[in-house]
Length: 432
Image (cartoon, rainbow, N blue to C red; front, side):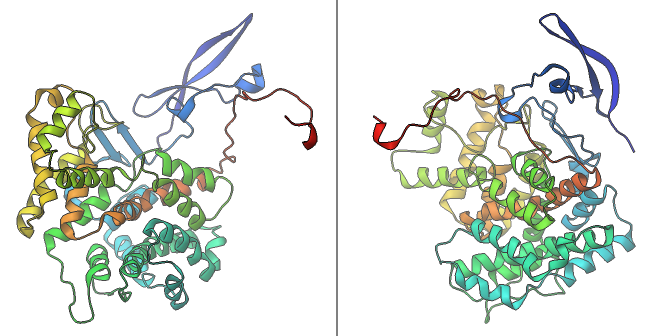
């Protein structure tokens, strides 16, 4: 198995003291200065707000090169995965490190199908949430609640027990997500159908009615499969780092992934495609604002344009290129006349042709296309981040497993304290 290797050392000068720090080189020629023993040797720590220059782990799961627009799962380019794989197979790859054989994939799929239903007690628990409850709040709470009905997930000491817990979580997260949506609109919760594939079953649980079973179009199913696969992992982002942080304490898989849901809920992380739709709605509602006018305001730095450019990908988002072709197919096939989708198309055309955006490589990203595709499928905006959670679940599980397998120490960042120095307690009647 490939792993980081030690190269020459870097020298750090602290006053009269010179410290040799090992240089670690990853398999993709990434270089890092190893400061593991810095505090023990010098009493110093490093300060890196937001950890933007700190490698907290050595991981074998996902590789990103933002400058070149590269994303690989376990070494396999995302373009190949999108063209040939499925979400369930991709989950196996991320979690176990290799593509499954036909026999392994069949056994893995059977485990997921066997656990897709939820306990009747859990079904009744949905009634305890208010109709206005956000689906992400319900999803996080219910992931933790599942472990109450399956105490064996708290004792994952061997690989066979872990595999059952991982399959159970992947199966049930989709059922819980659909149930949260059905509860929010006052509709009956649908049972999963064992004859349907993963994505078709989710769409059935979302949209079927007692008198009208939902029969999804194959291109819609393919689009949803792509959305989930392209979101399955993305290196050490906020939610994945949260899962690893919680998992390092010895917390079980369900508790750790529930924490990941909460981190993903933040608008600066999982809410990007929600921001895209909110902006489209704003343009639609405001008679004085058009797509072209918004673009001009963006160029004047008076507005932000959501869904264009990316914090990691400095050239292009490879996931967006994959989704664009499927988005064109889905939107054309569904033939939906939606003013928001029309506005999205206008923004896309303007940004792809305007030199301001082209020269700055501000191309539509994965959030732009996933947002308009999910809207076309009938998935409401408040479910977008839930969809992200379902897609990201394999990556969270893989990272939790990596923490467990590496027998990592508990994560415990340091800080630079900037508060008061020692001072005395003041009785209340002496406080000004």
